[in-house]
Length: 236
Image 1 (cartoon, helix red, strand yellow):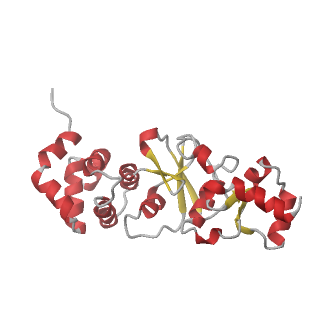
Image 2 (tube, rainbow, N blue to C red; image 1 turned 30 degrees about the vertical axis):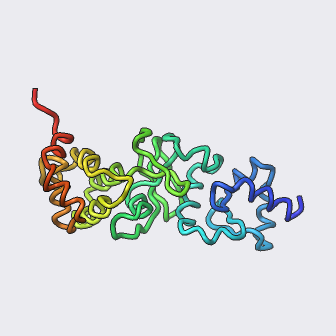
Image 3 (spheres, rainbow, N blue to C red; image 1 turned 120 degrees about the horizontal axis):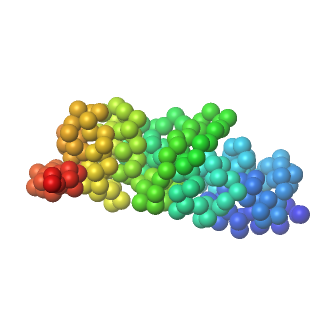
């Protein structure tokens, strides 16, 4: 296949992936490994990481490295085929916090959660095993990722430093995809590990540490009972 024809085929296939394509995806559209290697050698493609290539113009993607790592976790399927599928690995933990734009730490490795055990030889990728239902997954810029409440709960489950967790919760209160009550509910199982009885108590303590936005202060000041009622079941 001529270079121009191969690039057109790959570009069409990678439309939902910001110009990235995996070796397995390329095979699905008739481009074999030898052709990919030839295109990369001639610099018509750029090898981003093992098994993932970038087409010309894809360098404008601010999430390219994470996207390439995510595509590599389920390399045969295209992004739009797996984005809402809980059986496919999703970005999670500190990597999810970074993609959501909450918190202050840049993760050293890309973290993904998958329902089955997965291993990798790539040192910048780590997996967590857990089942995610539909309500725990959302999509940002075409990438499957845990929701903000689930992300915060995952960080708490790993005993994340309280100051870092506080910054995550503080930033989350300003995100349109997050609800303070949902965050409190998600934190309820982890509150005792941080010395609190309920998720609502923990949220309030975290916001006191980080310095909450005005909107969060108003929620806690004027509706604490409503928040607590969502976290603590009524006694029977």
